[in-house]
Image (cartoon, rainbow, N blue to C red; front, top):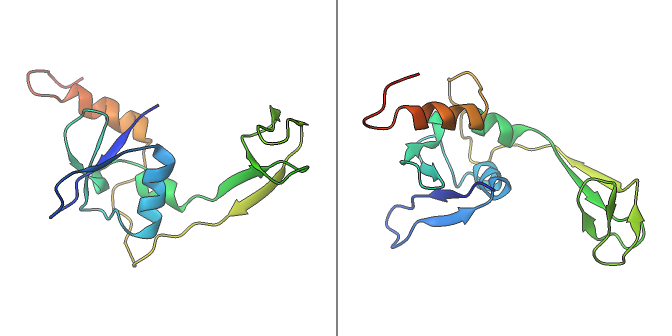
Length: 131
């Protein structure tokens, strides 16, 4: 799984590693803005606005699944609940509409997937030609 890092100004260390879902939470809370420097795994630092689709992904609704027996969070069914051991074929769902706090404006760049963005950035590393 990819690990993300956030460069924190006036802090002794970078924040991370973060899972992709944690990075999206930071965008939604306003902690990551378009000019915030972030990186994926060991890539170079980039402004968050350069990561195609990041802010659009943060705005998409999220779906959480819960065991209908014990109400413990689970992954998308079919799955076994790690809390009560029940086999779940249909879970209780919760859909959350997301916004970005602090009035952060979406970058003007058209949305592209983060995966395709990273592939393009990796191809442009020093000493390598563009594809």
